[in-house]
Amino acid sequence: MSNRIDLTQFNGYTKPDEKLFLEEMQEAFERAVVLDETVSCVDANLALFAPYLLTELKRCYEKMDALTTALETIAGDLVYASSGDAIAKIAEYADEMSSLI
Image (tube, rainbow, N blue to C red):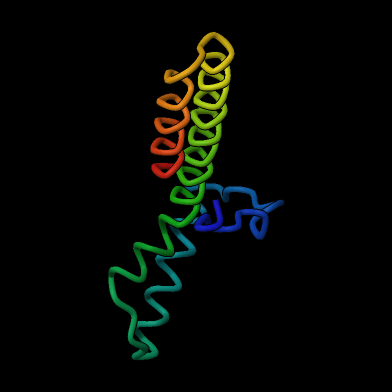
């Protein structure tokens, strides 16, 4: 899974109080506008939703890991219960599935 974002850099991160966070983001956005800095609504929204995106990414990674483990277990059980050509087909299927994850 080398294409994953390394989430360990966010260890210890705690989601801020939502109301306070929204107020701080609004103040920062207003300061940037007053200072005539280039701040787009997209940039502001990305910063605003970053904690939620991080939470969702962690949830997706956990689900992917659980599915990978389940597929490996199923493939192992099928190989154990099968023989001959069936094993080759199972191995081919497992390779195809692993490329999706």
